[in-house]
Image 1 (cartoon, rainbow, N blue to C red):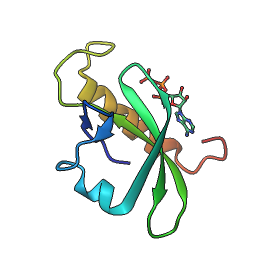
Image 2: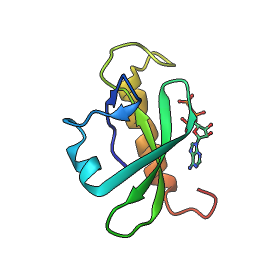
Image 3: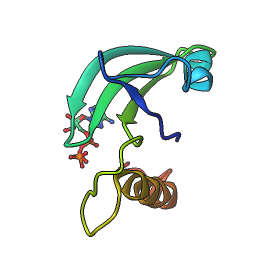
Image 4: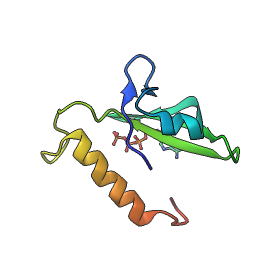
Length: 90
Ligand SMILES: Nc1ncnc2c1ncn2[C@@H]1O[C@H](COP(=O)(O)OP(=O)(O)OP(=O)(O)O)[C@@H](O)[C@H]1O
């Protein structure tokens, strides 16, 4: 998983910052939105496999919950998701 900054205009990851993402994935339609995120269907170019990519703007310094910045809360979420990766319900 990668944390990307998003392009404000269309909620897509910034094309200059997220070059690795665009090299590997083709972003498609919006699946849903969270408080500070947009989730898009993406296709892995090499395999054609579908993924849901959660796009979060971590560039600001606004506080999220429990006094954490959006960036720190996002990094914590990534760590938690790594712990549960591969579980049959995830
Ligand atoms: N794997 C997925 N497949 C399809 N849709 C998804 C997937 N993950 C998220 N979504 C959609 O995107 C929305 C936002 O997802 P997200 O994970 O950001 O939810 P959230 O944790 O409630 O958001 P936040 O904590 O940022 O408010 C979900 O409500 C859902 O509609």
